[in-house]
Image (cartoon, rainbow, N blue to C red):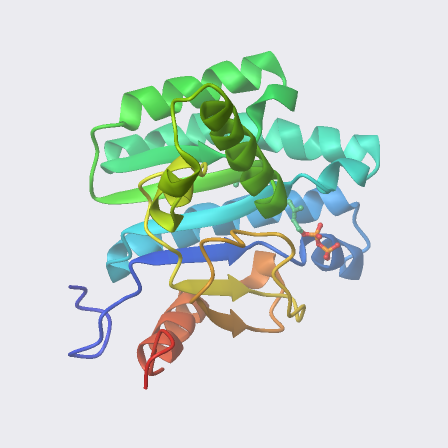
Length: 239
Ligand code: FPP
């Protein structure tokens, strides 16, 4: 339990964050969009640490979607560079006992980046103060397609019977595997949509939208989102 939250408030186990508004933040200052992403990466580090302080156990950041390849090449290159640089800094999280995981289709990423991702996952696998999940080249539909294809292959090869295909089996074959469903999804910048983020895992998620642009998102904003979540009544289809 966290001492920052009011007494009796249970933080969400798993928080998802759509880091939106970097481009607009930079544009407002007359700067190229990549400066917004650089500032957004700083916010990502601050918010990761504060989530841990609040008692969150899993936090997933939507860093790059399967649709983001449509952006101009120089912006995509700048974001990929930022990932590499941030992975070096993410190593500091390891010293803070944070486990790091990646979800998404890695095969399209630069092999050097893929190696670094593997190294960070391997070196942090036994840590347990919080799990940080980075969604890179991630799309919910892509994830479900990948899972269904794997299951279809197992059925074709006689390893699985069709009646063994349950919600639990599907869940265990998603990129998120054993990671619990997301409880709270935060989307800054005024947009109010899911944009293909954790679409299976968000079936019962609560949403928190704010007009603040991601680079301006503060620790206090995270607390406001978590407190709003704690004050909601989740019924999971019941009464
Ligand atoms: C969305 O804002 C942001 C992205 C597509 C990129 C986010 C990536 C980072 C912040 C780099 C962080 C690095 C790590 C390792 C997590 P947008 O560009 O869509 O903003 P706009 O809606 O204002 O145009």
